[in-house]
Length: 191
Image (cartoon, rainbow, N blue to C red; front, side, top):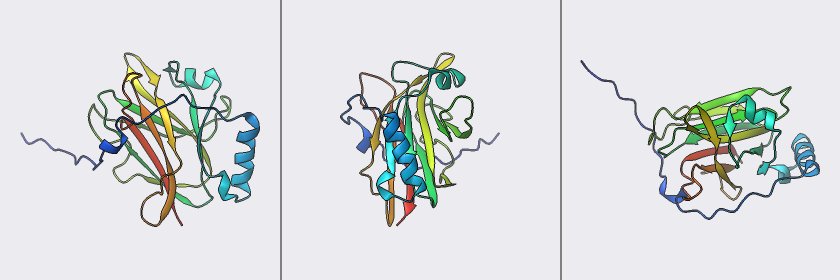
């Protein structure tokens, strides 16, 4: 019997190990509204990602628990945006991309999970293209019968790669190890 093996996407996880982490400072309601308005008006200074507090009902809906429960607001220009996920972790990872954090009016744009521990695949091999706008990321890892929120780092200084702009949301599962290679989601768009 022949076994089929799927290629494991390339991912250099080493730059994301042992990164310095501090608890995020959450955007205020006014800052959130300002970024949404800036995106609508084409203001490039609104683009980027930042941690925000979210109603507990959002986490209950997706069975996410833990003291690090939060979302990352991701604001891009109104152009095609490339979304790419990668992971290098013992814990199975899950990333949710939501179009809103209003519990009564939100949709899951993507829900990506690692297929098994220590696999770099988080979403499609080459990622996906999404329309630019405002999105919300929830990063978590599997524990028993639920998901535990990851600690996150927002990387707004990333250049997005060759001839592109962008940012990244990096996640780590454990409090005692700054392994921010565990859940890596990048947003990039052409200059």
